[in-house]
Image 1: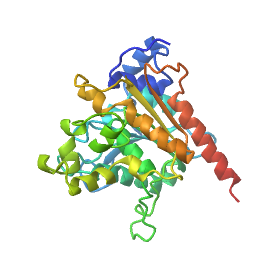
Image 2: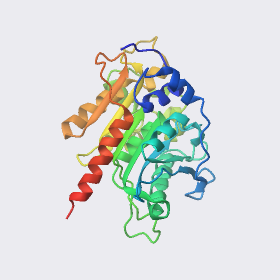
Image 3: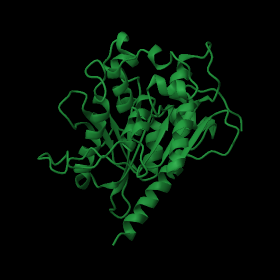
Amino acid sequence: MIVRSYSLAMLLPLILAGGLAAQPRQDRQDARQTKPKPDHENVKYGPHERNVLDLWLARSKQGEPTPLVLYIHGGGFRAGDKSSLSPAVLKNCLDAGYSVAAINYRLTNTAPAPAAYLDCGRALQFLRANAQKWNLDKTRVASTGGSAGAGTSLWLAFHDDLADPKSEDPIARESTRLTCVVVDDGQSSYDPRFAEKIGIPRPNFERHDFFLPFYGITKEEIDTPKAYRRYEEFAPITHLTADDPPAMLNYSYRNEDVTEKTSLGLIVHHPKFGIALKQEMDKLGIECIVQYAGQPDAKRVGPLEFIGKHFARAKESRRQMP
């Protein structure tokens, strides 16, 4: 297998289309496609102006509810929006029979973590609350995204269910649990101490512009109990337990040693974050696939293959329930 160098924007459509360097000419054509207009556009799921989502509905087979794939955009929690959903990603999901929701959330110029996490959780609850209206299968939901969208997807996957069964708000009573996650250049933690522990010396995350606004701290507070509490709470891996869903993590970077010459892009999107997560998920018996550029094993699993397998298992498990 020939491994080329791709930016994340180039890589996302290729990865979710079924593998690196597969049918490159067709992939380039897909990347230039214009996305079809959402069936429901800028749907409000919360009070903030960025609490909106776009929803594309897949064709239903014999009227059956369709599974749902969430797209959570990247941008360091400081920028980006739902329009970055790739036409190729959207097409492949819809062709597979999966409806797609692309979510906007509050950025750190408005509120630090966990605002983005909670917004995306609320969007998922909103979609489940309206599942019957849109013919969605609320028992089969996957989440995807790159960088900040990856970290958010992982946090939702591993955090305890945000549902509040006693809430007077019917949306808040809905679950935030996921069937599986497929993410790109994702961080299992944004804790600079964790990064150092897995082989990324400090300073690491604290060098990036996203860091202080994300945590809502000052430079002087980086190594204080206040910051440590936030590092732990907002790290997906902190919340990992045996009942959490399977995950696939794809990286556009190589698993290289970090030196003083290593780019900041690699430091904050290093495959080591996925490898460290896989080690913990393996201990718990949860499937975790980590794929990165230059990986010796040429056999790769396509993200839609991964999602499809776990959607099928979820459907079968539901069928076997008494």
